[in-house]
Length: 256
Image 1: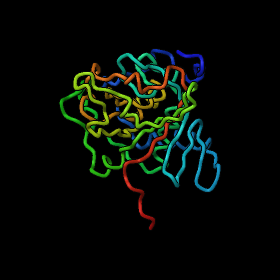
Image 2 (image 1 turned 90 degrees about the horizontal axis):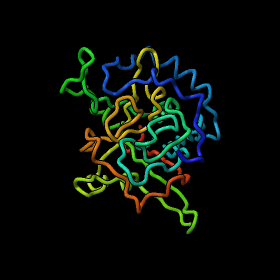
Image 3 (image 1 turned 60 degrees about the vertical axis):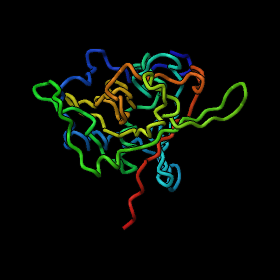
Image 4 (image 1 turned 45 degrees about the vertical axis):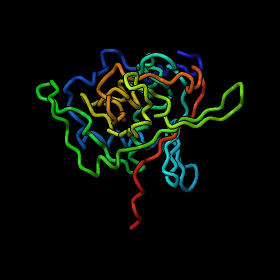
């Protein structure tokens, strides 16, 4: 791990508390969510008429963006995650951030996203079936978002802005994610034994489908953990500070 982001020891759960995306844990019950959300919302700070701060996240309700700071981690090897915390699976992730998954989840909700569970398998007796969980058309549509990575090159002083899809390549097709216009989807993770799994596992955005992450890649090849590599020549070098901006792919609700 690079030295730029200290490990968040207060956030790091014991290994025995982590849960796999392979298990048949119970999905979040609406009764499990509001109390925890209300507790975290007490940390929400108003910056101006349309902008709020929640932990490391800046939430702009006018621009409909969620932005936060991160740091480049993997630039060459196979990846399964786009963004995790320093206590997460950093050996499989493009970027690491000190931002908390539970705050990320709340930020999505504040901007009107819906949880799309259709990427995840139905579990029976703790084993996955071949059937995916149901989701309405509205839940699918209002889960999609675009992720932009911005940074300034230390040597050239040039500022770069890239859709994250432009930075990731499918090793079989030798094409970027951008070539198939693949989407990313907010799923909201789930509750297991009274705990928010994304916070336990420290996963914000997964590429290889992980129902415990707050959000996931929703395109073809998402269930293959051998396909995805960063495009090294486009990536900022390891340890580079970046700004990550999440923008919804659905229109804002009309005011009544």
